[in-house]
Length: 250
Image (cartoon, rainbow, N blue to C red; front, side, top):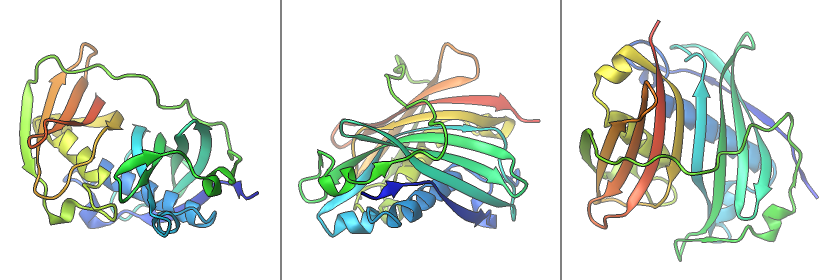
């Protein structure tokens, strides 16, 4: 039985991955985490390519991320990731982002499912994945679970068409694009004057090219916190639900 030990991947923040404050965007950092996860699963023989050969694929179901400091342009960072546990069909994976000096910049926990790429349905975790023994390199973060508060009435809305560059290897909208649309539903003054401190996002359904996505957001009862959802205008399906927490920029 193979042991799922932690892996690390190094990245340097590029100019097209920063906002006009010169700091890495959250979608860019999530892309780093997913790339690190890909590298780690490849060493175990369970990367997306290995799954696609069997007519299966990985699907991100939930991501809860907390950022302490955002790295800047040209800054070198390291992403550490490890399989942190299993619950029935849910596979948990944690991440920590470090600066070159070893400063903890952020951390995240995620939930993954396995999907049949032909039937577009979630399946039980296959044996060849179950045979990989989960050996967390460090104490797992609390699992992302439970319901998020729902929006009673949207204050901010935004509609976005799904285009070619929004689609990933799974032939549906990539999750970092969903994340981007969630944040862009808020007025520009929010990210301009504040930094995203925490984001809890649940991916509920897939959408494809040609769809139009309606984003909705509203303040939560907790200060500096917003509730979000994305819906397909074609099907009426709720695609994404999220909650974001912000802090005033220094």
